[in-house]
Image 1 (cartoon, each protein chain N blue to C red):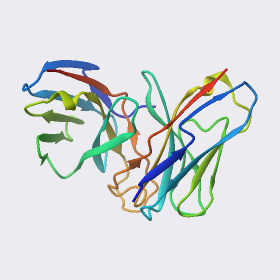
Image 2: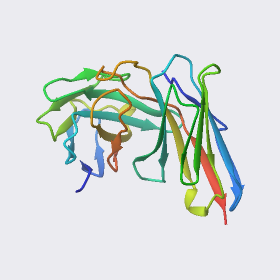
Image 3: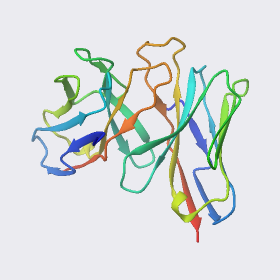
Image 4: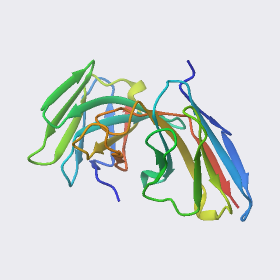
Length: 114
Length: 115
């Protein structure tokens, strides 16, 4: 039982390049989330998927797109990376959105955009 | 926008002492959760307290919730060097099970426990 896995662990991009961050969970959770963590800012929600087939914007969605590929996988895409997107990205999952469901986090992806 | 605000921002204590961290929030909540993050790792859930609960314990952790003051505290008793980490409170604003609520995290408290 691996929990929540993320790939890659580290990535360096040049401004304007694109990439997809992958996330998978093996806990049969319905809901999945993408956050970014910046120094002094805490975690901010980018996008989430309350259940398979649905996605919704979070607090900071601009510059990102997501795909809920199936129940297990939730990917985050940067179409044209900008230096402001340099951050640590965390994927998380929960049994359901809301109702007091704890979230389980992956180990994170450290992204640097030059 | 951050719902939960932790206080203090940083805390340094000696091993064996107790650590108290506070969280205040603005709007009504369904529950409040505390998470720990070790350096370079993802967050780990510690404890959840519902809006109709006042106090909850888990091992060396004690969480209180005062909905009238919109505040919560996390107490770690008999701290250890391994407790060194960042601690975040997260609020769940929705009242109804199954609604698309989203946790809102505070900026975190950095706890250093000196051996």
